[in-house]
Image (tube, rainbow over all chains, first blue to last red):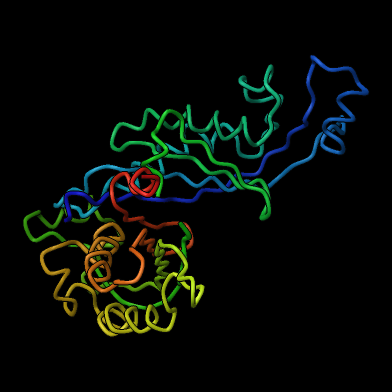
Length: 146
Length: 143
């Protein structure tokens, strides 16, 4: 039975950043209509929560899919350092062109974390507020989602 | 198919130590978790069962029964226990979230006869958890 089981490790991280939802392809009026108060020219901020799910074999020597220090250091370098207390629009190259919605943020974080060498990134879930959250699993089969 | 989830909490102590590794390696790999006197957590366990609601009762399974299964299989075994020394099923394994979640799956899976165990999620803290589920569970459910 155990060979048919799949184990995932889930870890939550936090960062705070500002953003403004605005598309250069839309007129001022359209931007205001589509994005509402999120289009405020001076931007606004959120305390984001990033939930990262990794899968892999549990190493019998350590009992772990991945060493937490390795994962924490990787997420710190790839996501938290470049995003925490930053303006997503101004400070993150990917959002010069793309609107920094949490959908796009989720995809960007997935791209930044998928090269983690010690385990397979299954999915990224980002909470923009307690009430809004977004998930992205890249090309992973939906069948592997618990 | 409907998924039903029940949550329970238990408190237990553990330590991370592999006797096949040197003291230094143990400290390097496990850090604070290697403290020889152990430490503890308030664990939160989420057990999800899948199934079709019974046409008569409207239930996937009787929550009372699930509560009793969890009491017997998990609470009695693990609550206010030392996971390294008092839980036979974890003998010889490092009691990480990953391993505890798998052991809990193995304990519960044969006991759940109405509906089917879908997922076990074990939180060691709000920021660290492990999921155990059948490989390709969702795809299987679609057939």
